[in-house]
Amino acid sequence: MSAAAEQMLPLSKPVGRFIGERKKMLIAGKWVPAESGKTFPVYNPATGEEICQVAEGDKADVDKAVKAARKAFESGPWPTMSLSKRGRLMHRIGDLILEHLDELAELESLDNGKPISVARAADVPLSADIFHYMSGWCTKRHGVTIPLNVLYTPGVEYHSYTRLEPVGVVGQIIPWNFPLLMAAWKLGPALACGCTVVLKVAEETPLSALRLGEIMQEAGLPDGVVNIITGFGETAGAALVGHPGVDKIAFTGSTEVGRLIVKAAANDLKKVSLELGGKSPNIVLADADLDIAIPGAASAIFFNHGQCCCAGSRLYVEQQVFDKVVEGVSEQARKIKLGPGLDPKTEMGPMVSEIQQQRVCGYLDSGFKDGAKALTGGKKRDGRGYFVEPTVLVNTRAGMKVVDEEIFGPVVTAMPFKSPDDELINQANNSIYGLAAGIWTRDVSKAHSIAARLKAGTVWINCFNIFDAALPFGGYKQSGWGREMGEAVLEHYTETKAVTIRL
Image: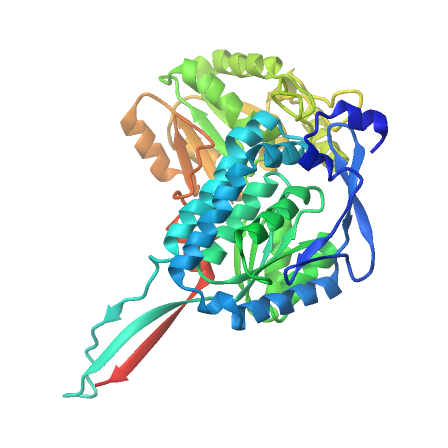
């Protein structure tokens, strides 16, 4: 990074050390360069300037990390650690995340571009909460006893029970939109169940996960239990998915990449869980409290710059309030202050990369070609950084790419409907995705009725983007397999063993 660019960033001393450094990977408890010696640049999306160089891990590094995770799983202190001690260690990780809240928020803002106010209020506290919540499950997951009635052995009694055992070495691949939080979502349940992990972080945003690795070491996590690989999907990611020493893959990212992972994992029938894309319908009924629904609909799409898999990107509004709602959302969009994430006045930062900026603008061009009209926004912002204006599109319909495909940017398509009938439900469900949905209404009966018919893993009523460590999150259809968070996620990291003894 140039001296001029560095002076523009109000970086604290802990975060400032990342500037110009060559960051290493965490393998077997040690910070090591890539076997190849290669590095790659990480950029500040608000300026396009290089922050630092990071080790470019590949197949050789993944192999080392998997062997370290296997050793930690089979021997050493991790498999023999008491469940209560494991829980205390995980809780300590959460405590340390909160102790370093400002530093982590600043690092997340620098690397990802999101407003530091959002990182402070959401990303970092929610990451700590995952470790706190999951730490409690260490001592609460257990098997059951099962009475048998074996008809073909009359007079013989049996004692049967089940054991929940860790699935083993887990390969985890996370995206760039919530780098720290996605690491916590993946690591928390895996550690609670006693697994060991090789975590492959997004090449665009590796810095907060690397800092988390240091925090986990400070908390006392044994060497090799968590290994962190930096590198590219087609090399490091593919090597991790295809490695015979990995028992399970957990992936968050695009549906397109999810399909590739399923194919690769099929070679040795690895267990796979996937949290994938979305194109979430957000439904505003005429009886909704518009003072809540309008800012809520704006937040549903513009939160995290629209770089959110569950973003309310398809806005369906009942005809009689359509103009009022759409103009209200447009007015909210016009007021959003774009700028560098580290500026405390910023309300929306840049897209994470130039590639993502080009992708979003490509969708906008496609929409305009198909007849869509922008009530506000509709283009990238001139100057430095990868900014795209918050955009509200009308004159849109099913069949347009902007309506059907995940844009992953601050773009909402608004469409009217006549009444909340079968036609509306069919429109809302007319997607390959089924991650989330929103409903805005004062009518509780309508709310429950519509919620029951929507093909989505999460339905928010008179709210949107509400997350909690105890609440399962995941999708129907091509939005993924399985769930993150809550008790439900623990199923992905355990094997059930049935034991029967003749008495």
